[in-house]
Image 1 (cartoon, rainbow, N blue to C red):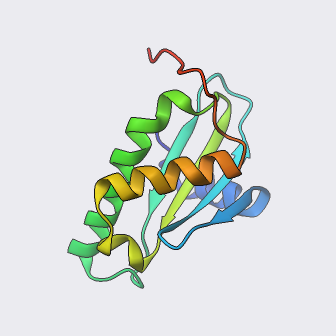
Image 2 (image 1 turned 90 degrees about the vertical axis):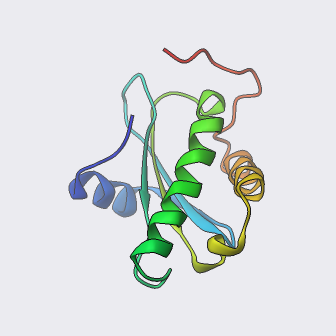
Length: 114
């Protein structure tokens, strides 16, 4: 499930906590729902439209692969940084895993997706 509305992103930025990595910034806040929602964003600082779309695709794929390990009940926003474009997909997955563990948003036992 994704965050889509600007108000949802603003709520995460206003009330959430952040963890920085050279490739992206992770913002998270509890959402009192039974599932975790993830939103992606890339500003113009990242590059032109093609670069921003590639950055979002890399983050989306990493989040898709790691989603079963994220506990339910969180709103997460991933903000791309410019260095993300130089990284490979496995590097982005490893970086996201590292930040999720640092943020204590990692369950070692894989949850079933429905």
